[in-house]
Length: 165
Image (cartoon, rainbow, N blue to C red; front, side, top):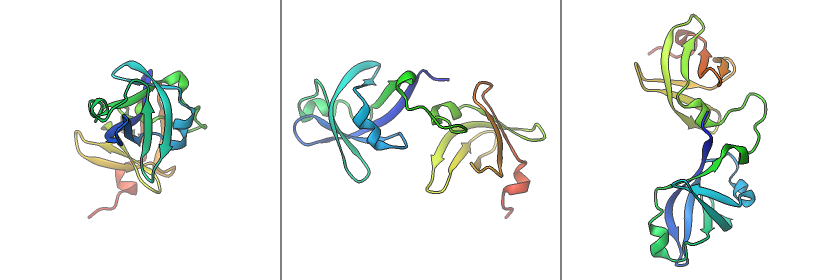
């Protein structure tokens, strides 16, 4: 398990006073109201304030006071130590813990490693790229077991749930 979790990606500047536009990588963007600091490139940076737009969070970070300074942070990630993360409900997981897990079907066949988690309106989807590309809807009737400690996910055999063309 990773000790550092990504909570946002700085995608642009906002205004002239050093604010940055952030894509929230957390289920609840309002969570930014509770953050005192974030890590950027491993350096602790104090959050001075935030406001919310439709699909972005505007964040003011201490020490970034101009558009020129803010520009240097584009495409960087905002992270927090795991101990500051919001506790999860039972049977929910941080995406950072799912990525890299090995996926097997109930017969023991290895299907590959989770490359990414795609979040959709209805459910998440585990994306496996190798050995064969596979998109797995994260539904109770498909995913039968997730063991983060062993980095292992068990799903029903693909033929039982995937539409054949």
